Amino acid sequence: MNSRQIPAFLYGLALASMAWSHAAHSALAALALISLVVVAPQEFARRAPQYCKLLLAFSAFIALAYFAAADKERAYNDIKGLWPLAHLFVAAVAISPSNIGVFVHTFLYVSAGAALYSVLQYFAFLPESDLVDQGGRYTATSHVWAFCVCMTTLVAVSFDAVLRRSGHHKIIAATICIFALFSLWISQERANLLLAVLCMALIPLLHQSCTKRMKCILLAAIPVLFIVALAFADTRLATLLDIFSDPELAINSIRILHWQVALEAFQSAPWFGHGLGSYPQLVAENIEHRDSLLPSVEKGHIWCHNMPLQLLATTGIFGTSIAAFVAYKITMPLVRAIKTHNEAALFGLCACLIHFGTSATDTPSLQSVRLAAFTILVGAAYGAKQPD
Image 1 (cartoon, rainbow, N blue to C red):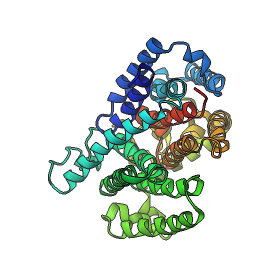
Image 2: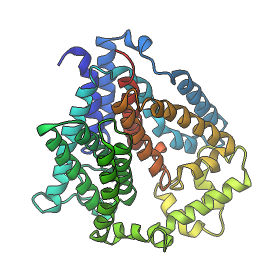
Image 3: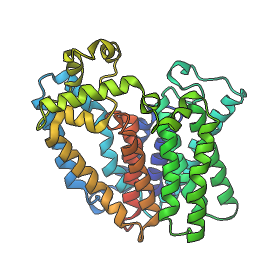
Image 4: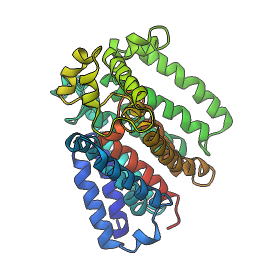
């Protein structure tokens, strides 16, 4: 490994570490930045991503929203998890076409170990996690969501490798993909398993190495396998089969109450919202639902379990439009790169699908570990499609 590959290796390790520790990615990303400054400081100016100025403007908007908030402490709770936005810049500089392989291999093999660990827990070869009450019985980390977002990302990256590689490398990638899918299945996290399957459908659809016949076979087989997996799943995961016939059964009732509170709050201040950090107070002021929601809010569940509604309630149409514009400007270059930089584009688009998809039932953009999984992979995708 040469010195220019070290930052890519550390970033691959940072992404994979989410399956083992919810905080290690911070230290590893910091090491990646330091190593990049040491071995190639000139790269920051030469390889700055195209959205660099947009990212700086968005950061300025976040700072302005913070200083305009009535309660600075609560506003800080809303934005303190946004620091991984820096990966969109640093990872894009650290990772290039010549070292993307190091990043991918490191991520695949280190996170595959966590998937195997989870499977061994399920079959009682290893002790279960102490996160049983949080749904994390079969996880290798202290944070259920960190593990699940890493496994979802692993499914996407390994499935791409299955279609892109040959020989024993294809077999290894397929094995890793199966372990990652199985670990999501036993974790009972519905949104993550669904998004992993959607990534598996998106990848062959846009994959350059996939023939039309293979695309048709995979696109027909994947939904069937998903339905079969749900049919044999435990009760919580099996409720996905009722998403259309009985949505209240499939969706947590507390989430629905949160959504109603956020929607009512948005309707009362549609243009600029109630300010960053205002959601706990909005719950307290909601006469109809506060008795049901305040206990969980007081325990730290301070967001409404839906990123668009959270933005609408706190920043209104103005702030939500800015966030949507930034997301659009980051996503569209990846769509346009499908034919020219297929692997990088697919990594970035799968990261967008996972992150934006989980935003429908949660607020991953406000949680540093889940935002980091998105920004590291998108930054890596942008870096891989730039010339060395």
